[in-house]
Amino acid sequence: MKVAIMQPYLFPYLGYFQLIRAVDAFVVYDDVNYIVRGWINRNFILEQGNRLMITLPLQGASQNLLINEVMVSSRQHKLLSTIRHNYAKAPYFKAVFPMLEDIFLQQEKNLARFLDYQLRRVCDYLGLAPRWHVSSSLNKDNSLRGQNKVLAICEELGAKHYINVPGGKSLYDHAAFANHGMQLFLIQPRPVSYRQFGKEFVPNLSIIDVMMFNDKDQCAALLEEYELI
Image 1 (spheres, rainbow, N blue to C red):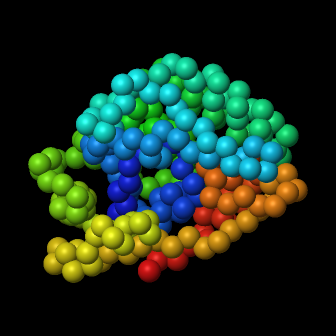
Image 2 (tube, rainbow, N blue to C red):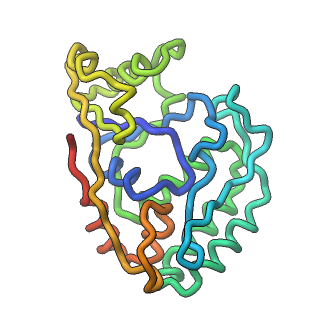
Protein backbone atom coordinates (compact mmCIF):
# COMPACT_ATOMS: atom_id res chain seq x y z
CA MET A 1 0.00 0.00 0.00
CA LYS A 2 1.47 3.33 -1.14
CA VAL A 3 0.16 6.37 0.75
CA ALA A 4 0.56 10.13 0.32
CA ILE A 5 -0.62 12.81 2.75
CA MET A 6 -0.87 16.43 1.63
CA GLN A 7 -2.55 19.65 2.68
CA PRO A 8 -5.23 20.68 0.19
CA TYR A 9 -4.11 23.47 -2.14
CA LEU A 10 -5.89 25.68 -4.66
CA PHE A 11 -5.50 24.02 -8.07
CA PRO A 12 -1.95 22.85 -7.28
CA TYR A 13 0.79 22.30 -9.83
CA LEU A 14 1.28 19.16 -11.92
CA GLY A 15 3.63 17.55 -9.37
CA TYR A 16 0.84 17.39 -6.77
CA PHE A 17 -1.25 15.27 -9.12
CA GLN A 18 1.76 13.17 -10.08
CA LEU A 19 1.98 12.37 -6.37
CA ILE A 20 -1.68 11.32 -6.35
CA ARG A 21 -1.06 9.15 -9.41
CA ALA A 22 1.86 7.41 -7.66
CA VAL A 23 -0.14 6.13 -4.68
CA ASP A 24 -2.92 3.72 -3.79
CA ALA A 25 -4.39 5.95 -1.09
CA PHE A 26 -4.35 9.74 -0.79
CA VAL A 27 -5.06 11.64 2.43
CA VAL A 28 -6.25 15.25 2.43
CA TYR A 29 -4.42 16.71 5.44
CA ASP A 30 -7.12 19.05 6.70
CA ASP A 31 -6.45 19.07 10.46
CA VAL A 32 -3.14 20.94 10.44
CA ASN A 33 -2.68 24.68 10.74
CA TYR A 34 -3.57 27.00 7.90
CA ILE A 35 -0.44 28.57 6.37
CA VAL A 36 -0.68 32.31 5.79
CA ARG A 37 0.76 33.38 2.40
CA GLY A 38 1.19 29.72 1.46
CA TRP A 39 -0.39 27.75 -1.38
CA ILE A 40 -3.55 26.61 0.36
CA ASN A 41 -5.66 29.34 -1.21
CA ARG A 42 -3.53 30.75 -4.02
CA ASN A 43 -1.59 29.74 -7.12
CA PHE A 44 -0.22 31.00 -10.44
CA ILE A 45 -1.89 31.03 -13.83
CA LEU A 46 -0.73 32.46 -17.16
CA GLU A 47 -1.34 36.08 -18.15
CA GLN A 48 0.15 37.31 -21.43
CA GLY A 49 3.19 35.07 -21.10
CA ASN A 50 3.81 35.81 -17.42
CA ARG A 51 2.83 34.34 -14.08
CA LEU A 52 -0.24 35.84 -12.42
CA MET A 53 -1.16 34.96 -8.85
CA ILE A 54 -4.80 34.14 -8.14
CA THR A 55 -6.12 34.02 -4.58
CA LEU A 56 -9.24 32.39 -3.19
CA PRO A 57 -10.78 34.98 -0.80
CA LEU A 58 -11.18 33.74 2.78
CA GLN A 59 -12.87 34.93 5.95
CA GLY A 60 -10.83 35.33 9.13
CA ALA A 61 -7.95 33.12 7.99
CA SER A 62 -5.25 32.72 10.64
CA GLN A 63 -2.27 30.48 11.25
CA ASN A 64 -3.87 29.78 14.64
CA LEU A 65 -6.70 27.93 12.93
CA LEU A 66 -6.70 24.50 11.34
CA ILE A 67 -7.40 24.36 7.62
CA ASN A 68 -10.79 22.83 8.36
CA GLU A 69 -11.67 25.77 10.62
CA VAL A 70 -11.20 28.44 7.93
CA MET A 71 -14.10 29.69 5.80
CA VAL A 72 -14.28 30.71 2.14
CA SER A 73 -15.65 34.09 1.10
CA SER A 74 -18.45 34.22 -1.45
CA ARG A 75 -16.51 36.69 -3.65
CA GLN A 76 -15.29 34.26 -6.28
CA HIS A 77 -16.76 35.60 -9.52
CA LYS A 78 -13.69 37.80 -10.03
CA LEU A 79 -11.48 34.70 -10.00
CA LEU A 80 -13.60 33.04 -12.67
CA SER A 81 -13.53 36.21 -14.76
CA THR A 82 -9.74 36.38 -14.51
CA ILE A 83 -9.38 32.76 -15.61
CA ARG A 84 -11.86 33.23 -18.45
CA HIS A 85 -10.09 36.36 -19.67
CA ASN A 86 -6.68 34.68 -19.76
CA TYR A 87 -7.66 31.27 -21.13
CA ALA A 88 -10.70 31.89 -23.35
CA LYS A 89 -8.57 31.20 -26.44
CA ALA A 90 -6.82 28.13 -25.00
CA PRO A 91 -7.53 24.94 -26.99
CA TYR A 92 -9.34 23.10 -24.16
CA PHE A 93 -11.09 26.04 -22.52
CA LYS A 94 -14.56 24.73 -23.38
CA ALA A 95 -13.78 21.35 -21.82
CA VAL A 96 -12.22 22.71 -18.63
CA PHE A 97 -14.02 25.95 -17.76
CA PRO A 98 -17.41 24.37 -16.85
CA MET A 99 -15.59 22.28 -14.23
CA LEU A 100 -13.96 25.42 -12.82
CA GLU A 101 -17.35 27.13 -12.65
CA ASP A 102 -18.78 24.17 -10.77
CA ILE A 103 -15.90 24.28 -8.29
CA PHE A 104 -15.80 28.01 -7.67
CA LEU A 105 -19.57 28.44 -7.46
CA GLN A 106 -20.19 25.53 -5.09
CA GLN A 107 -22.15 26.39 -1.96
CA GLU A 108 -19.61 24.89 0.44
CA LYS A 109 -17.97 27.56 2.60
CA ASN A 110 -15.65 25.43 4.71
CA LEU A 111 -12.19 25.80 3.15
CA ALA A 112 -11.11 22.18 3.67
CA ARG A 113 -14.30 20.75 2.19
CA PHE A 114 -14.22 23.30 -0.63
CA LEU A 115 -10.68 22.28 -1.60
CA ASP A 116 -11.41 18.59 -1.08
CA TYR A 117 -14.25 18.84 -3.61
CA GLN A 118 -11.98 20.74 -5.99
CA LEU A 119 -9.25 18.08 -5.80
CA ARG A 120 -11.74 15.26 -6.36
CA ARG A 121 -13.24 17.00 -9.41
CA VAL A 122 -9.83 17.57 -10.97
CA CYS A 123 -8.81 13.98 -10.24
CA ASP A 124 -11.98 12.74 -11.92
CA TYR A 125 -11.13 14.84 -14.99
CA LEU A 126 -7.57 13.49 -15.04
CA GLY A 127 -8.63 9.88 -14.52
CA LEU A 128 -7.03 9.55 -11.08
CA ALA A 129 -8.89 7.32 -8.61
CA PRO A 130 -6.90 6.45 -5.48
CA ARG A 131 -8.63 5.52 -2.24
CA TRP A 132 -9.54 8.89 -0.79
CA HIS A 133 -9.35 9.88 2.87
CA VAL A 134 -9.63 13.07 4.93
CA SER A 135 -7.26 13.12 7.89
CA SER A 136 -9.72 14.63 10.38
CA SER A 137 -12.03 11.64 9.90
CA LEU A 138 -9.31 9.06 10.59
CA ASN A 139 -8.95 7.36 13.97
CA LYS A 140 -5.62 8.67 15.26
CA ASP A 141 -4.05 10.44 18.21
CA ASN A 142 -4.63 14.11 17.36
CA SER A 143 -2.10 15.25 19.96
CA LEU A 144 0.66 13.97 17.66
CA ARG A 145 2.57 16.43 15.51
CA GLY A 146 4.79 16.41 12.44
CA GLN A 147 6.36 13.11 11.43
CA ASN A 148 4.73 11.21 14.30
CA LYS A 149 1.26 12.20 13.11
CA VAL A 150 2.10 11.16 9.54
CA LEU A 151 3.39 7.81 10.81
CA ALA A 152 0.17 7.26 12.77
CA ILE A 153 -1.94 7.92 9.68
CA CYS A 154 0.21 5.59 7.60
CA GLU A 155 -0.08 2.83 10.18
CA GLU A 156 -3.86 3.19 10.34
CA LEU A 157 -4.09 2.81 6.58
CA GLY A 158 -1.69 -0.12 6.46
CA ALA A 159 0.92 1.70 4.42
CA LYS A 160 4.11 -0.03 3.35
CA HIS A 161 5.37 2.96 1.38
CA TYR A 162 4.98 6.65 2.21
CA ILE A 163 5.53 9.00 -0.73
CA ASN A 164 6.03 12.74 -0.38
CA VAL A 165 7.04 15.72 -2.51
CA PRO A 166 10.73 16.81 -2.64
CA GLY A 167 10.24 19.29 0.19
CA GLY A 168 9.65 16.33 2.51
CA LYS A 169 13.38 15.56 2.48
CA SER A 170 13.92 17.99 5.36
CA LEU A 171 10.82 16.85 7.27
CA TYR A 172 10.98 13.07 7.31
CA ASP A 173 13.56 10.49 8.35
CA HIS A 174 14.00 7.22 6.44
CA ALA A 175 15.04 5.40 9.62
CA ALA A 176 11.89 6.42 11.48
CA PHE A 177 9.72 4.98 8.73
CA ALA A 178 11.85 1.83 8.56
CA ASN A 179 11.34 1.35 12.31
CA HIS A 180 7.60 1.24 11.60
CA GLY A 181 7.97 -1.26 8.75
CA MET A 182 7.62 1.34 6.00
CA GLN A 183 9.76 2.79 3.23
CA LEU A 184 9.93 6.53 2.59
CA PHE A 185 10.15 7.76 -1.00
CA LEU A 186 10.18 11.24 -2.51
CA ILE A 187 8.61 11.96 -5.86
CA GLN A 188 10.84 13.89 -8.26
CA PRO A 189 8.95 15.47 -11.16
CA ARG A 190 10.87 15.60 -14.45
CA PRO A 191 11.00 18.89 -16.37
CA VAL A 192 8.06 19.14 -18.74
CA SER A 193 6.91 21.66 -21.30
CA TYR A 194 3.97 22.08 -23.61
CA ARG A 195 2.71 24.67 -26.04
CA GLN A 196 0.95 27.58 -24.34
CA PHE A 197 0.18 30.60 -26.56
CA GLY A 198 3.28 30.34 -28.74
CA LYS A 199 5.51 32.27 -26.37
CA GLU A 200 8.33 31.03 -24.15
CA PHE A 201 7.06 28.26 -21.88
CA VAL A 202 6.22 29.30 -18.31
CA PRO A 203 6.66 26.28 -15.99
CA ASN A 204 5.15 25.28 -12.64
CA LEU A 205 1.80 26.97 -13.03
CA SER A 206 -1.48 25.71 -11.60
CA ILE A 207 -2.97 22.49 -12.98
CA ILE A 208 -5.49 24.83 -14.62
CA ASP A 209 -2.81 25.79 -17.14
CA VAL A 210 -1.94 22.15 -17.85
CA MET A 211 -5.57 21.25 -18.54
CA MET A 212 -6.22 24.32 -20.68
CA PHE A 213 -3.41 23.45 -23.11
CA ASN A 214 -3.49 19.64 -23.09
CA ASP A 215 -6.21 17.12 -23.82
CA LYS A 216 -6.85 14.25 -21.41
CA ASP A 217 -4.41 11.90 -23.12
CA GLN A 218 -1.68 14.55 -23.09
CA CYS A 219 -2.41 15.26 -19.42
CA ALA A 220 -2.11 11.53 -18.68
CA ALA A 221 1.31 11.46 -20.35
CA LEU A 222 2.50 14.48 -18.36
CA LEU A 223 1.33 12.83 -15.13
CA GLU A 224 3.81 10.02 -15.79
CA GLU A 225 6.81 12.35 -15.94
CA TYR A 226 8.28 11.65 -12.50
CA GLU A 227 10.50 9.21 -10.65
CA LEU A 228 10.61 7.99 -7.07
CA ILE A 229 13.86 8.49 -5.15
